[in-house]
Length: 365
Ligand code: NAD
Ligand code: TYD
Image (cartoon, rainbow, N blue to C red; front, side):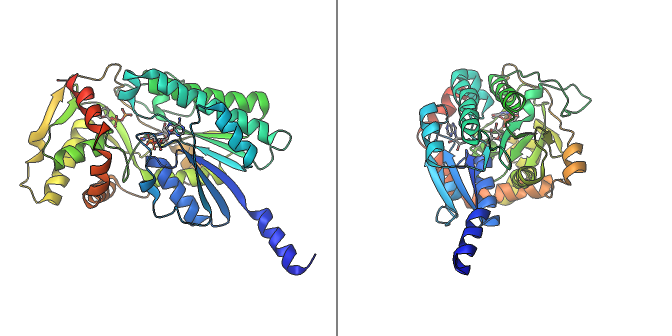
């Protein structure tokens, strides 16, 4: 073979094809952007069904990249998943596609079973079939949540060894998918790695979750529906720090290991909301104390977990990861992004969103 041909072959051998599922969603879009830009030698295939939460506008800056392609597909559809795996061979899978909102899971648990449980098992089956007899160098990376561990009291943290104790249909479906991933490792030697992360926030998060919903309501002078007594506690992590952790675990995590990812950043909802109101007043040029007046205590979420807090020492000590963005910086950047991207916010809050909002929140008054 001529020198040039050999070189081409070597480059071909070096190329890796990675399937990222849910890459049009909130966290997935940041992971796709990071991988497409950082690894031009990888082919990144973004699989997403573009549900209400998926939006190709989230990754409009990378869709023209030569190492990026898109597949619109429902992971709950086994034959569609199998057909994709017949057509394309993947070296790795980073699985983020999911139904992700607790309140929606209370209204419609079955869609969570279909996507989160059956969808994950469909991907596991397809990966197992494709990698049969050649598992070396392959990796199935399942992205999960700290909510599988249930609720903490005032003290303590979730460790990787904490027993699963999910309380919502969302966390039950994620717990189930985590168990399936582990079982495929034990039973079929599927090379997997799993992470459980705390609450994310940042640009491109759909305004059904606390922070973007409240940013949108403040900007529109709408009431801020605080569930129960507002003393529920979450551990918040900036989405780019989660994407960096995913990059690290994908490349350096050990097979069959679980890593907890968290922000070392606990806030009660009411303190966080007051902080957000202050930032918004400044950015919108409103008098101090204007937005807190929008706070309205409403009927609680059923099965509401009191406190989540992650002990992220394992990923810190073994892989050297820690958050790079403080909460004050991350929250200010997030507010700035939503105010600068009104078109995005207006487009995702038109149509169906209005029906969602009135049906979800009319029950709470
Ligand atoms: P998201 O709801 O913003 O995005 C989910 C994406 O999955 C969307 O693009 C949607 O179109 C796609 N999708 C949904 N059903 C699908 C189906 N049947 N087939 C193919 N695609 C489908 O979610 P997110 O907040 O970005 O969360 C991503 C992952 O991270 C989820 O697995 C979630 O459980 C996990 N996670 C989220 C958080 C958080 O705070 N948001 C924290 C820890 C873990
Ligand atoms: P959310 O963003 O839905 O994330 P999760 O339930 O997965 O942690 O909610 C974060 C916290 O904010 C949770 O304790 C519920 C509370 N919350 C409200 O008080 N009002 C709201 O309108 C929403 C969406 C959430």
